[in-house]
Image (cartoon, rainbow, N blue to C red; front, side, top):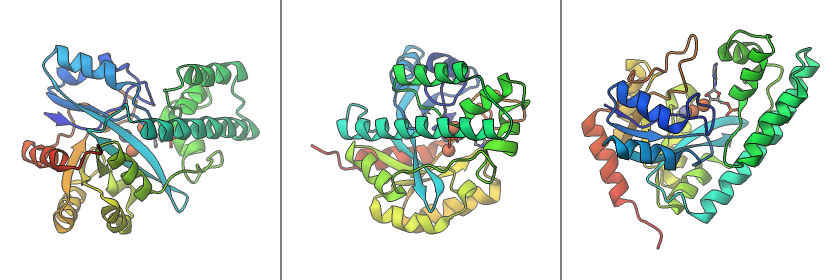
Length: 282
Ligand code: AMP
Ligand code: FE
Ligand code: FE
Ligand code: ZN
């Protein structure tokens, strides 16, 4: 089974990279990519763990771009994680995440849900100290769960942190086209993450113009009709197809489960040959 969309605790996933790899293997996954939000911090550990058990590992990332105040997730694969321009960009993304995290802490407190400032400082300090770990709403959701205000991450998003909710803080950031170019600049290929969740297909054309390589047609939250729609759109634009579970951990009420969605092998072959053809910067 092939899963090209997985998260570790280098961003908002539950498990450390080696534990994620072990769990993926137990679920029958043989080829995997770790795609943490705006960080490559989990890749080395995941790659070693995959190597030790004979799994195929693809370096990955999920970068948050912004378009008309909406978040657009762009996946990158097969890039060189040592690329200085890429790492400088990611460091700026993570700093903005910390800024936003602190603003959301202030907002939830104003809503009558104060979170222990020492606890918040510890979370931020740990991310800062390890500077490569990226913070997001899920970690704030965890703090709200720990404080007893909500039962689950999902509750926290439904009531406070979702895009339409009172404690939401919009982010600033690069456009989807810029992110596609940044990934290409590091020698990688890009895929428009879970386009069915965003439902802004008008973004595909400009992203293709910037050099987009693939659409993530297969995803835990895509219905069969949505999968078909993006398979057709990929064919129309001459794009490859990627896919994965977008597993973050065994959350209550979560249906992004390990082994729940796989990228069919022929699609992976097409995806891989796209990567082989991508022009590498010298
Ligand atoms: P952020 O990086 O701060 O924009 O947070 C986005 C992340 O929150 C996504 O990558 C998901 O992992 C997670 N997320 C989004 N919506 C929900 C939800 N309804 N319940 C739980 N987690 C969610
Ligand atoms: Fe996430
Ligand atoms: Fe995403
Ligand atoms: Zn994801």
